[in-house]
Image 1 (cartoon, rainbow, N blue to C red):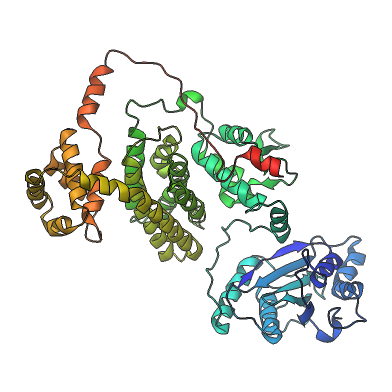
Image 2 (spheres, rainbow, N blue to C red):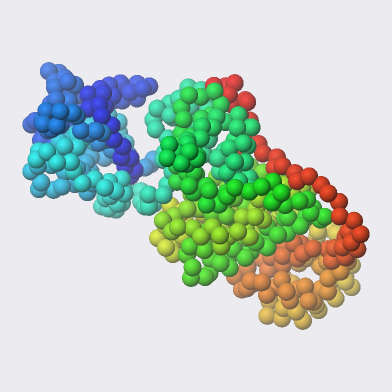
Length: 557
């Protein structure tokens, strides 16, 4: 059951909508199911003599008295709260909806139980699965009601109602979720043939760009280059930018950053996107795979951070991990890219909570993640190794949020986990099959078997029984050729994190080893660069939109 509180200033206009046909003739049999005073609330849906104006006048009675007293109408005096059951729930009766309405207005402070001076309100049902509660927020004693955190209180009461009415139990919110699209925004998207609203589309573009750029100035520049309209807000006191709004290409509706998502506000962005000079940007590395290795290492480190007692540091790493997923999806072409994009989109809800993030503590992961926007996209098995590490971090994030009662964030992290898992299977299966086909001769495999029993005796039997063992022998042979000692390497990678809970320990070791650098190639590059230091220009991230290119979207508008 989902409540959605908003305010306005036109009682008559909202009544007209509630009792009217709807924007697409979707309203059927609109009528009042509950009110502050059933006898005093004329029902245009049931009484042919009742009018919208008559009902609005009754609802606005205390508002009009206060207006005459003050000489002006109280601002935003209309309180509106649709309450909708979840898809698949049974249809409630009018009597049940009446009880829901009375409990919601009591819980939110609109009409506390037993309060004779409470605000006037009505609940209108015009569809099987929801009602609309309309109230005017001036009490009989002339005061305004105490409606602070009314959205949160409505949600809390709806969780109780779900349990008592046997409805689907939804996740509790914590006021950190982004604003959902309005009915008008959804209708507009439908008319234009868009799968998502402009608000949702802009949100994903903003997250993707913020994940890749290194300064707030670059953030605005790249958004503009993608065809998105950008309007900075300049403070009258300081003369400096202190906010911004975005609009989709060719659109006239603007959305402030904080209206897209709380962590897309100007202040939140500047916490992790300080002003930087171009010379501060990383130069291309000698080994194109180094950026991928650093990111994989940083993701594994973030996994251990979640086991610590510092929630602010952990929350900072989860926010940086959100950037990692966006850049990983952008830098990884192939059939599994769609699942990576879906994982990044899902994790946007898991990257923020009521816990204030310590962004400075997650600098290493965030910098490594941004390097993916500049890195070559042909790192071979390193992509899969990074996705594999991301899978485990997403699952750990779901558990971390669940332990702290962050229900929506835990569900979002679990959803991201499933998308990452699907992406991993699409990418890894052919690679593991190829490694298996290239397995070394039996004598070499037997030598590696003895090495495993020496290096990891407690897990040797499980590793050797794993279907991925032949693939691991190929990876060990390659690592040996690259200058690694197999026994030392196995001991090192096995010690990074316990293997007790790993269902496929050979597969886990395979990707940990894949992320190791080629020592002989590193030594050769070191010798070749001692005498010369080439000067190169820092590359720019290759950014495209999440769904379609802005120019195409603009034409469709």
